[in-house]
Structure formats: C-alpha cells, structure tokens
Length: 589
Image 1: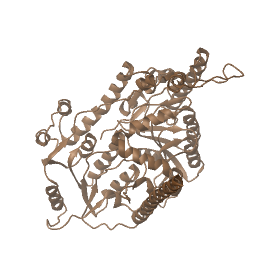
Image 2 (image 1 turned 60 degrees about the horizontal axis):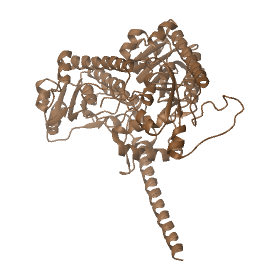
Image 3 (image 1 turned 135 degrees about the vertical axis):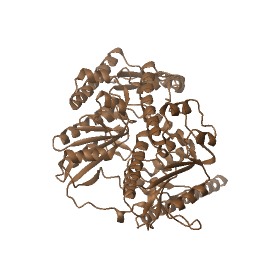
Image 4 (image 1 turned 60 degrees about the vertical axis):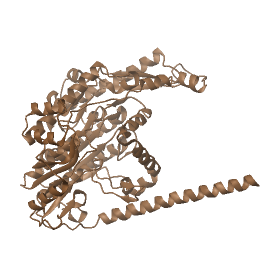
C-alpha cells in the first residue's frame, strides 16, 4: 500500500509538471502569434526620422514567417527579425523615403557569413548616394561589425570600448582521435587532391594541399576586406595590414590614433549629434524606426506588371526528398524550378544558392531541372556565403553566375565515407555479428565489418564515375574543356575573386545585380519579383518540428557560438551516399 501511494504521488507530480510545461508553451505560442499579428499592422513613421540598424540576430536568406522560430521560451516573447531579402529591400526603400534622414548603425557583432555582410554593406553604400548620413556607434566592434560600419560617414567608439581587428583565421575540427578511442575506422573513398571534407575523419591536422587552398582563398578574402576598408577610411591597405598583424588596436585611443574611428564618444553624445543632424531640439527625443519595423505589408509597393522574375532560394545542405527552409531538398527545389519554368508569367529565373553541398544524387536531380529551365527562359545564379561542391553542381548549368568576392565556391570533387564499427561493437559493447548472404556483395556497405578490397574497388569506381559526370557537366555549362575543369577541380575551394579569374563565375555582384541581369536577358523593363519555393506553413512547421526546435533552442543556449560544431558533428553522422560538400563554415563576427 505504501508503494501504491508512492507511485500515485509520483504520477500526480509528473502530470502537474507536464501540464505546467505545456501551459507555458501554449502561452508562448499564443504570445508569438499575437506579436506576429501585431507586427502586420502599419507602423507610423514620423517625418525627419532616423533608421536604426542593429542586426543583432542571425541573418538568414529569407525572413522566417514562422513565429515559433523567433520565440524566446524563457522571456515568453517574440523578437522580430529579418532575412537578407527584407534587409536589403528596407535599406533600398529608405534611400528614397523623404521621412528617413539617415541611418544610425548600431552594430556590435554579426551572425552572418562574409558574403552576406558584403551584401548589406553594398546596400548601405548605395544608400549613401542619396546624400543621407550614416553614423556608426558601438561599445565593441567585432571584425564583421567594423567591416560593415567602415562605410559610415562617421564611426564612433565608446571611450572604454574596443575594436577587434586582428585578421582572419580558419579552424577545422578533427574527429580522428575520438574515432580511434571509440575503435571506429572511417573508410574513405574520394576523388580530388584538395577534397578536404574527409580529412577530419582520417587526420588530426590539415594536409598540406588543404593548407595551401585555405591560405589562398582566405588570403583573397582578407585582401578584399582590407581593400574595401582602405577605400572607405582612406587608410592605405599596407597600414591596415600592419595594424591587424601587430594587434595595434589595444585601447580605444589607439583606434583614434590610427584613424580607424572618428571619435571616442558616449552614447548620449552620439544621440546629441543625431539630433543635430536631424535638427531636433536637444531636449526632445530622436524620431526613429527600427529596420525591422520600417516596412510593413501595407507599405510595400506592388508592381502592376504581369511579367515576373522568379527568385528561387536554395539554402542549406543538399539532401534527397522534401527538405525544408534550412535544407535543400531535391524534390522541393526541383519542383520550384519546374513550377517557375512552366509558368508563362515567369520570364526569367534567379537561383539564389547558399550551400556547402551534400548528396551528389540530389544535386544531379536539381541540376536536371536547371538545364530544362535554361531551354525556355534565362537562368541566372546568385551565390551567397558559400556555393561549393554540390552547391556549385546545381549552379554550373546557368546562363550566368554571380558571386561575391568573398563567396566560397568551387570544390569540384566527391567522396564517400563508410564507418567500420566492428571493433567498437566488440571491444566497447561486447556485440558481435554473424549471418548468411546470397552473394559476396549482398551486404556491401555494412558497418559491422571492414570493406573488402573488391568492395573498395566497386565504391571507388562509382565515386570516379560521379566525379567524371560532375566535371563533364561543369565543362558543358561553363563551355570549357573537361581537362581544364579537372585541373581546377580536384576538390579545390576558391574565393569568388579567384573563381572569376579561373572562369567558374562570370561576374562579381549581389543578388540585385543577378536580378537586373536576368531582366536584361529577358528584355524586361517592368517586372514583379516572386519568391520560390513557398515557405513552410508556420503552423505545419510548429507541430511537425516543435520538439526539434525546442531541443535546438536549449543546445544553442548552452553552446553559444560553438553550436555550429555540434551541427557539423550531427550532419556527419547523417551522411549517406556519395557526397559533394565542403567542411568550411567561415564567419567574421
């Protein structure tokens, strides 16, 4: 009887706790939906306003329409964020809006890739053509934040603040030691001297070819970063290199001495300057609107033209099946291309790619739809932070390819990984395997034993065939000799600038440049932009993946910036089939 009451009491406690957690989640969801609905209303923008730009959230390719994605579970409130598409659109809108007199750039760090930062920076440079001001202020500037802010008319730093300006670095996590401790052997079959995606599983440091390619593309990116800061700040590139190389910015006054900033000010002093620029009395508050609240649905100008340009967003690793807004599912993306191809109102297609690659088979499925679309209407590719390996595979058939100078691209190579976990099962878990088969290759790919020489040969031939197909399709798409593509392939990664020099891309430019090129090729003057594929319905996403999102939320809170390493390990465990991908996740913050 005593145990009976103990179990009843425990069950009651469990039920109450479960009900309490569910109640909190329900409140949070309702709050997010109410907040989202509230954001749909028209925001009142006063004349003589300042546009406040902070970008203190991860910048995705498109604004996420799922309210749960922006939910703070502990704060029970939803924070509005924008994707790159709306960030660029809002800055462009503010350029010609008479109510907006200038921009207050309030950026400390950026959760974005280098090409994404480049897109926003170029939009701000274009904004300045209006004659309106941009004032930047921060207590701490990360390298990415400083690069973005360097275009401002005036850059101010807190008198006790700091600027992180030390140069770029690239670091790769290696799993070989961990696999050895677990008695797991990574059996690698690859093509490409530089195909470094397999190195973390078989080495404990970078190979010399990998160091060579990383030094090359990272050096190219750094040269571009220094050149652009040099133009904006009128400091020689050599001086900037010396400042970073010797870590000369060690105190706020150093930043002023080396002309990296225009003044050391507290925020109230910067606000006073903004009031002066907008001719507001010092005793009154500045009229401002955040970038996130600036454009609302009621204020978006709908184009009357029946002609359309489809912008198809391919974001994330490439997998077979449907995928979602964060992965490139071959079915979903190929269907989007097909829909745009068969729609007579769509006169041109821009394929926006931000992907490190993935499944070679899934990449080929998408490539096929790109080829078919190209036969009926112009297809232009715009590359984001990375469009490499499988990401380049799906791009190579386009009429024209645009990349940013700091886009990671190329990596034309393939590989396969089959783990041999025989010793792990036996030595760590005491598990052994035995069985029967109808033929010597019936269990090819089993992880319970090592590959035989015959099996290795079969897989190597398949990988070789995929590589030959890859290089042939790149050669056809780029109108180059296959031997030449093989010479610049071999899994080697290039920066956008390097890719332009060797013929893998046609022009350096942003997504708006790609859209303009598509319009010109389709001979369009008036057109409307339509986005594909349709974003996942918020309610479907909430109930289909709410458990995953909650888990990811807690892991992100615990790991912070190291969350990307967790994601890389999780992705590695899910690899299947021949892969075309790169291991790099390069960010400046």
